[in-house]
Length: 119
Image (cartoon, rainbow, N blue to C red; front, side, top):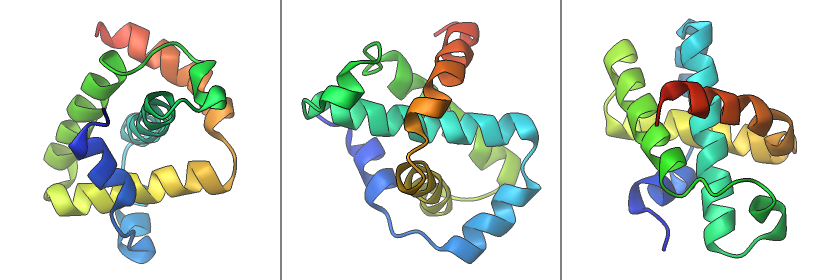
């Protein structure tokens, strides 16, 4: 079953100009966490739905979702955005990963980041 928070973030309507301005103000670490949170959401959703491309990655249903929650909570603190604003931000990032077919490119680094997070 898909986590409603992740599904809502993925499906939220992106506001590219607002998301882009906040994203450019993020630290490199925050940008990486945002990108990995979006990648974990996409992979987790794919794994929940039996997508073969997503299933080639380790199961991220629990640890990836916890990373997602903590990363976005940290971004809320850093940016002052509310849940809706953070939802638009992560949705825009997920859409970029999907449109540019970069999920497989970022997942190895995201898995390292997940491992080093201690989750």
